[in-house]
Image (cartoon, rainbow, N blue to C red; front, side, top):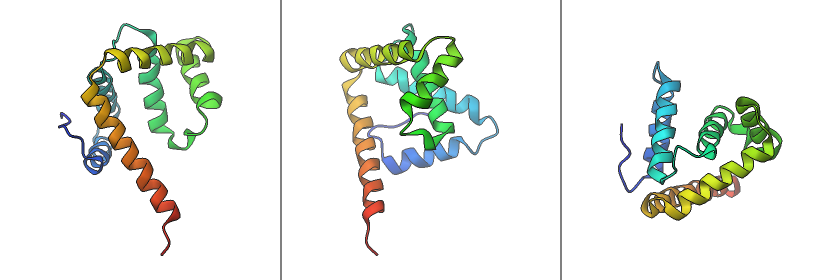
Length: 130
């Protein structure tokens, strides 16, 4: 499937949930992450692209690691690619800078709108008084 723009956060969450309920979920998820990185304008020929792709998939499988990027995520990606956490972090930052400066600003804006909505709704749920 293809994501339509503008991206509705509720639709995106349902879309991701649907991806995980299919028999070939890993291949589909990997394909969707790859498409998203391409839509952002991230070139596949930089090391950080592969590191980010791997990190997104690891984070998806381990949602509880959100606060453990330097302690868990970077070392895990480094082990996968037989390199160091420092190199992983540097390459990922480089890839993000490239996507940010050369990428599709409309897609980047839509993703940040969605992330802002998800963060705000999570905060709201945490502080909501019955």
